[in-house]
Length: 409
Ligand SMILES: [Zn+2]
Image (cartoon, rainbow, N blue to C red; front, side, top):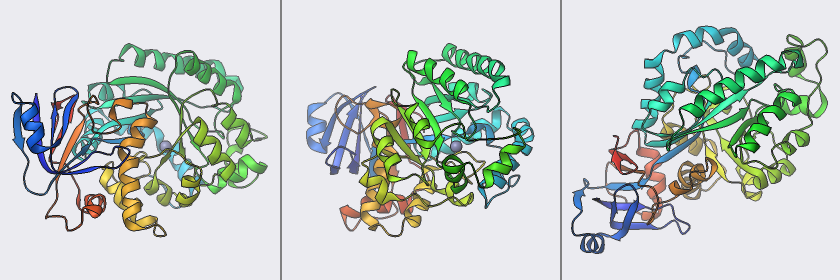
């Protein structure tokens, strides 16, 4: 049993309580949290660690959307246009796969670890990242991905998916959870989509899908025209949209789904997402691929559970969550700075935990998982209301991190 004492504890509870001069006592779970004197008095046998001045304790961060299999990319892909990027991914896919060995996966995971990520949702296209994810100290929701628009190959695609899913089941444990990803509405035939979603339903698995990432996707699903038409002609003779946007959303109505991006969603679609799942915001990826900026007002009006994803290094330069949070903070310039900072911190903690169904990770309170990180700010904080902002502005790495009460950084 340990006690950590810090200048501030950001609980991320429903009142967004910040405890000044606070302490947290834990083993695998949080046993006590509050003012330092009381916590020490209540738990006399715990080993006490006083963190340095200007220390902040908060729940470990959650990255709800990452593709580790493209981690070898630095400058190999084309940016600035979604379709051009997609074409370059297809062209360079084998080379990128080949370049990402076990050390490459570990390096990517380490980048998340040092930034304080205690749990992440990994979308896996090939299963090559399985071992690295299983070996990681973090909680991993492992989304086995399926896609394919040609029904002639459906049997082969479904059997490959089932094999990968089974391999992830064999590896599953308390911190490694198999799940299902449908790549997108433009890339997945309804038969293939139903096949995977039925398995998810039967086994109560979390699901995820890219949805309304680009203007091209909007145009294609709405009217079967635009840049996607030419792109899809390279795969199918006479391509037509396989779903309307609402038909696609409807497929997920009895599941718990993380919809990713949503930058070109209509309000009606955001309202549906709010009811059947959550939304993962990947700002840097959206910017690099020249996709629109997510409209936070519309997302908040729809009362959506919004989490943060870095996406993969195929469309980002960093898997450090603080880099992602800083970029997002600078991007949404119509929003009040302090209110946005608070929303971003909650998106990267509580909301991410809810999205990945890690309900014991939502906040720092008695009985929750001891998945805790500490950060040392460069100086004292003038105004406690600015604490979330200062954290986002100044943090590059954490001082210490605990998962299930065990120190991992
Ligand atoms: Zn993605």
